[in-house]
Length: 137
Image 1 (cartoon, helix red, strand yellow):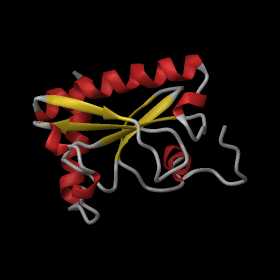
Image 2: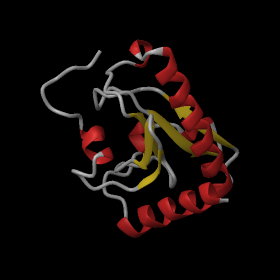
Image 3: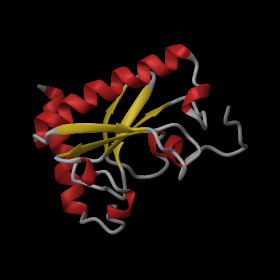
Image 4: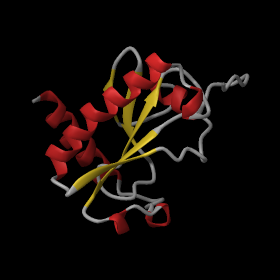
């Protein structure tokens, strides 16, 4: 389990201590756009419980995480119409479990080397609004 003295960057986004483009949240998790998208619509689904490795999540938290990932994944599918919405658990960059949801048209689209580390804020805002609108349907 992850038990440092300071909240993770994801917890700080969920608590609104740091800015984030949150598209969905509930009692168990939150979903927000990544600041380094691989593709437009690239979203992270994060449990509120701070745990470093997904295999250490309590079973109920794991179920809720995947339930939220499916909900948000369907919205990404509606908003962007990719061939698939990839769900990846890599999690090396932040020690807090997170599922990457990435709209893809081929497996070649899944490359963290392709991440845009300086995305256009307007494009991020547009992607967030498209996902929120799809969730509202």
